[in-house]
Length: 78
Image (cartoon, rainbow, N blue to C red; front, side, top):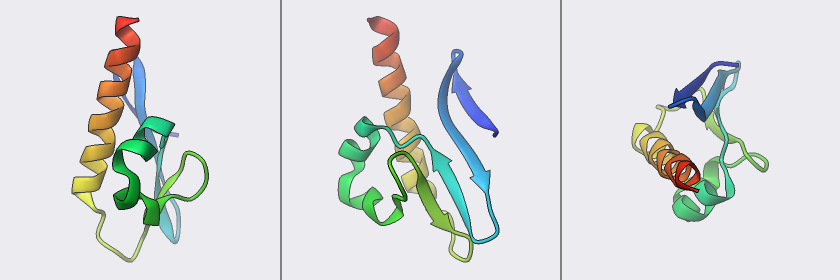
């Protein structure tokens, strides 16, 4: 599965299916930080699902990546 990385750490994986596109991982921090905005797209513990027949919400995807960048940066400092 293709993924985007930052300094060797995974930010998100992604995949396209017939009826939807998915973005992984929706970590606990991502779910907490984006709450209600993300809720309609959650499909399981770590999957964010977007219907194929709707425009991809680029702003939401950017927010997910921003939270993941911050999360990975915090882990590097430990």
